[in-house]
Image (tube, rainbow, N blue to C red):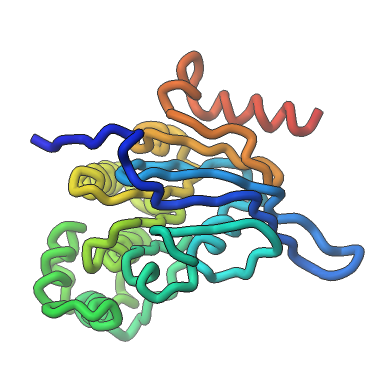
Amino acid sequence: MTTVQPAETRADVITVEGLVKRYGWGLRRKHALRGVSLTVREGSAFGLVGPNGAGKTTLLKSLLGVVRIDAGVVRVLGRDPSDVEARRQIGYLPERQHLPPAWSALGFLLSVGRIKRLPDPKTDALRLLERVGLASEAHARIGTFSKGMRQRLALAAALIGSPKLLVLDEPTDGVDPKGRADVRVILQEELARGATVLINSHLLSETQRVCDQIGILVRGQLLKAGATAELCATSDLEAVLLKLMEQADA
């Protein structure tokens, strides 16, 4: 039986204060994020939702140190996002996959394991291929994979090395219903071992099922954040999001 640590005693894995990010120059300069502040505690499953163009991917990239912020403070695992040690403890699944088509699934995971300096990357890679349902395709070329298979492989890559933080951008994109159920099981297993999970997804019902915390981003502003059970106490997540979008447009 897994013992869940009380929320108030858990460490803050992600801390964002007054985050501002702008793109463009001069009169064409636009805000992607407008003073976003949030905290994600250890062992939480935090779902980030919002319409297209809300700034969700920009926020994820800010957490990963991929984009340079204009103002504010970002800390991941107690460190600056650009810190190498912090990055080694993060598993990232990007929205757009750029997997080498000529490589085998096993070869790709071995390369990720070596980058993360695992002592035995092959054992970890084979275990993860089994876990995501690709054991029989270990030596197949990635170029022959369907979109759903590539998504499963990318998830396996994010899980390499048992990271403390998983940042997943549209983790079930292109995955069939059986695959989505499999991903849910994997994420529950990761949470049970103590990992923290941050998910950006347009599949609101899936996010509501998996995540215990939700943040709603609209036009670069975090309009609501809190426990899923409280935010969705009287209506589902889609209804909550649509209401906030209407209020933002008013």
